[in-house]
Amino acid sequence: MANPTDRQKYIDAISLSADYVLGANPSGMIYVTGLGSRHTEYPLHFDSDASIRAGGEAAPGISVFGPVGAVPARVYYDFGLNTFYPSFPQQPIMLRYADLPSFVRTNEFSVHETMAPNAELLGVLYGLGK
Image 1 (cartoon, rainbow, N blue to C red):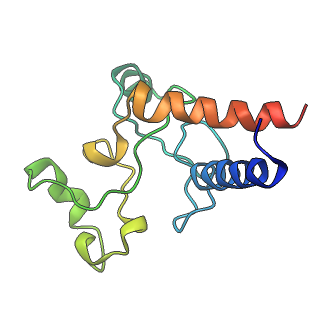
Image 2 (image 1 turned 180 degrees about the vertical axis):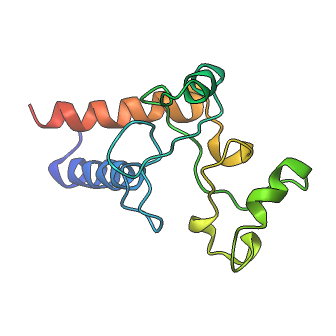
């Protein structure tokens, strides 16, 4: 068991990480579908895409990658890139996010890189409250 000072450091780090994912970040965006009033709406997820096309919403609870340093030079990024002012590469790095289906790098997710760590993160915080 960690001493109380070390334990508090871990709790602080976990809390800051959760704060970021849940909207305490420069864009004010929650990078989990279905949470809060300003969350990602277009994860790269086939079932969510079908639901959205039918007038519904994305599956809840998907944790997307979020902001990225750069996007590849692919034609499907052009529409989104042309909407940024200043341009995407001139944005502060934590604002380099577009909630568009064509922005694969920002709206992709994986179980081992985003879903499981966020579930563990929030589970630990939930357990601390008991």
